[in-house]
Length: 334
Image (cartoon, rainbow, N blue to C red; front, side):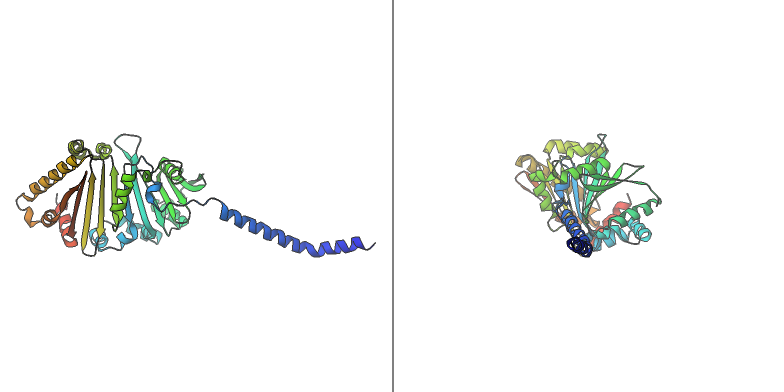
């Protein structure tokens, strides 16, 4: 007769414990879901997130560039960093200083002579601060934004524009026009082909990036000619003659020295030889200009190396930082 009363008493005693147990199970289940759900991040290989149709790629080691003497003397002291200075004053921090690796690429646009540009960036990024900074810089802190998920990745787009930004994990950002950002997301997820599939371009990018602060690779340069205007018309003949397949360039920022290099990939050793001879002849032509020997351009031109290796042309050279400053002053006159 006393059993029901004992059961009721036991139930009353265990109810709080039961609630705690259920709460613990819920927390564990939520944690497991957060840990086991797919976590997307930008790949270690920056080319693996660049769509295969991109014309060219520029990789920048931002932290090293900002810390260089070249940046300070050739950019900041010449008043060419006003945009960044405005961002620091407006936002209270330097957005670029938090980026370790920046990759910018150009790809086909709606019109033949217009390219679209997009970028990926990795670093110690605080997404909310970056959004707030962008609003402050635009002067519209109440700028309406549209939030959308693409393949599980959070993106933000202005309701009055076509630009979009995607936040990939806590250390990655993708920015550009809406279509390019979507294509980058699909590419890094392996649903679209990337630049990483081009073995020759991938190897050239790795070569240009090694030890360099800036590295660029362009595939099928003839596709860029319509965007270069008259300069493109002048270059068209050389590209057709020597069948240039790809270009690579690098720049290392030493303390008092800029060291650069370039590689031109042609379709045969004979065309590479012809192109090297053409470049050498053009150099001699410039050096023969009266008075050129007294300018900052003379020494770097004379010391530049031009040689061939199979179907590729290799160029390399250095210029002292003070000579680069003088050269910029000379060019600013024209």
